Image (tube, rainbow, N blue to C red):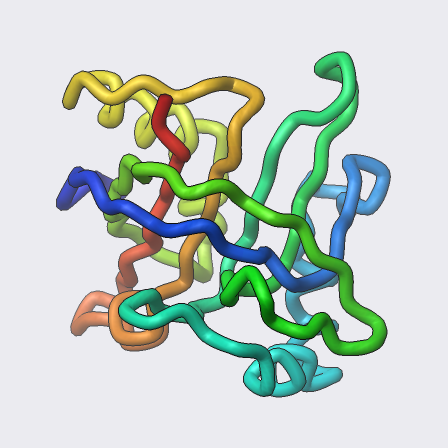
Length: 169
């Protein structure tokens, strides 16, 4: 597992549309993998395709996370980013996210092994952002962005690239 690119990207005001999970929704190994499987089995990403997109912004699947409350609450969202005026389909929730610059790391590794979702991976990507001089709030938004061409097309060794993003301050 390694970081192959670190850069800054700006996003406008957006609406995160999806489903919200908390720490109590984690599986026995501490992940939300079962919820992701449910999303694909139920076709929920297909339902979101009716939402109004943002020009020049991909509507790749995201795992969005942030700390809430007094630091004891954790939210993990599965969904995608859409226009702020997008209608929220029945059965989904939404959260507005203010325009911001994102620090983005392309994390290269094996998706099947789970290494891309490890604490080691998180620590590595956050350190890479800091090495570039990027600052982020521990209580800000963080995203796993599953870019279709980088994540869904493994290379000859079976590795993919996961975009790990943090709203910068």
